[in-house]
Length: 220
Image 1 (cartoon, rainbow, N blue to C red):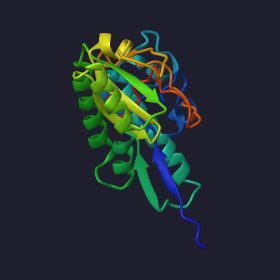
Image 2 (tube, helix red, strand yellow; image 1 turned 45 degrees about the horizontal axis):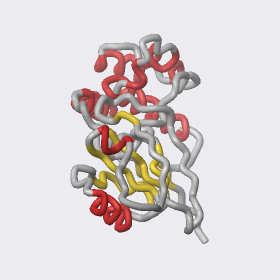
Image 3 (cartoon, rainbow, N blue to C red; image 1 turned 135 degrees about the vertical axis):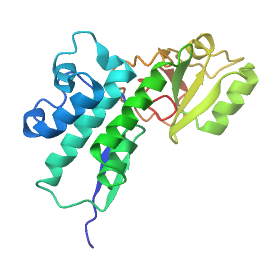
């Protein structure tokens, strides 16, 4: 059987201080172009982040786009071209760049504008629910009278992202068991927490309403 490969690019939530450390010096022309387009130093942001701007979409999204692209270039220098390209949310732009849908500077300008517009959204919240599928969650929301909470994203068969007013996402009201743990993270202000790792619960487990990292297409 012929082996086929895919390169998958992460989205917001994958960022961390120190990302790109081993790549910046290898691609000085790309770094110079990025700094010129963005008006700030991507290197200083990723390695220092004194102002904690890696939690602000206006900065973290273009920075992650740059690091994703430099990582792709490093892989392309030593690995065969992949059969497939895909990305998660912001990473879709990197997949398009890798597929030659646009050039690096065009893609970076698009992502910078995307992050700027998303940074203006405030007042909302999101919660990731682990366990039941989307139909069951929709029933629970209806039973609880939470008409202003939406199923914003289907991350997997066992993880659904809800969005709505902070008060309702923080502590969803349910008329009866199953019991659930609730915690929320701000989404509208674009200040995500560290990336979350989601366990796969047994089929009999009750739904778990868990704080999310805002690393979803619905949010970022």
